[in-house]
Image (cartoon, rainbow, N blue to C red):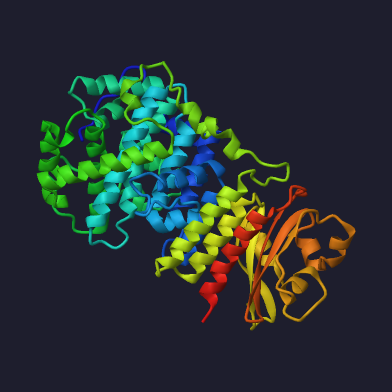
Amino acid sequence: MPNLPPSPGHGADARPVRGQLLHKLCGDEGLFALGASVARVVQLASSDDEGSQSLAYYVLSDVALTQKILRLANTPTYRTANGTAVTTISRAISLLGFNNVKTTALAMLLVDTLLNSGHAHSVRVELEAALCASLVGRELARLSFYQGAEEASISALFKNIGPLLIATQEHERFREIGALMADGKHSPGQASQMILGSSYDVLSAAVLREWKIPDLIVRSLSTLPPGPQKVAVNRQEWMRQVASFSLEAARLLGRKGEAAETPEAGELLLRFGAALGIELGALRKLFGTVRAEMAALLESMNLRPGAAAEEEEGAGLPNVLLLATMHAGDKDKDACYPSGKPTNARELLLAGVQEVTQMRAGGQCKMHELIQAVLETLYRSMGFRFATVCLKDARSGAYRARLAFGEQHAERQAGFLFPLAPASDLFHLAMENDADLMIADAGTQKIRELLPAWHRALLPDARSFIVLPLVLKSVQLGLFYADRIHPAPEGVPPDEASLIRALKGQVLVALSP
């Protein structure tokens, strides 16, 4: 790219301008928190079962994010063939795929943080381009032979982070860049260089470095040379091509009409077709798939498809309020007792039982996935603040927590262990008698006397809890435990208790030889 003269009023030295921009973009409290969240999701391990568990932990720590991921899993595009509702994040990850949920969570973080700005129309346009680009990147990754190709969807999502942040934080500059591009004489890179002293691609890479995003993804945002692209010689070059193609394709898809039949689509194929192995028929199929997935994604976020193109500048987006209210008309569904237990616990438990039953019936469910789904169902359906499954560890001579959800789950899981040797405390008595305990008020004298010292030290504020022993043919295997910080005088009626036992029964059947 040729060295372009600075625009009037922006000074001759580009470095201080870019430095000031970086400071503003990365120093803002909301954007700083966004960067930390983005980095955490990007860095979640995906090589083994622990990756899925870590992602489930992260999503469940954010109620709004949990609801949106579950809503996406229940859209017609993704819902299972028999129509069974998806009620747990564990099942959503299994259904949608780990990398799909990871990229979708990143997209939703961007939406939640950036969409409620004072320039809703411009930000919405750039957000939709970023979301759509990530879906294009994911489809291309499915066709690739490169290992770890799924990261291309993250690169495609972040390819537009520069314009998106400028639209949010420096809207006047964003408008100036758009005006320069409108005359057709300047590319986005040239226009942004003139106005910002830094091209959008360079700015995007700088922001992601500040956010501690892996260098492989950062480098994939660099500008490609002009003209038709050659077949990539390595994954890094292929990711650069995918990121650029995905954003350009997303811009086309953002327009009305048949995007694949436009002159711009022909130019896109001329530039990327040979490199990415795409011809017109494949492009039509790709665009059709992405349109359907984009509609499902926007539906899961309560964003009406195409609204960005119809909104007038400054008119605001009424449906943005839906992001905060999360189904304003469903207040009864979100109602809880003072204890924190949802008033519709029965419906949530029933949906969870159906989902877990379907998982087992499929015949491909791993034991840890089944236990995780049961634990998550208990945790969400009953409004617990902490839930864990504790299993016998013969080598250490103790029952030890193996999986946990909720507040401080890692610290509490580490401390949740007790000896195998029989004792007269509540936990051993429950297992010895194979009795499901549902304690409405742990503050009563009789219950306090039965709580072991380790529990009083680890969870001193537990005021209501359940203990579900896992006993198979008189062999004590462990237990499920979950608690709240408030008493639960509403108790557990018989229909809910039956569903809870049905959940536990699914685990026991799976454990049977």
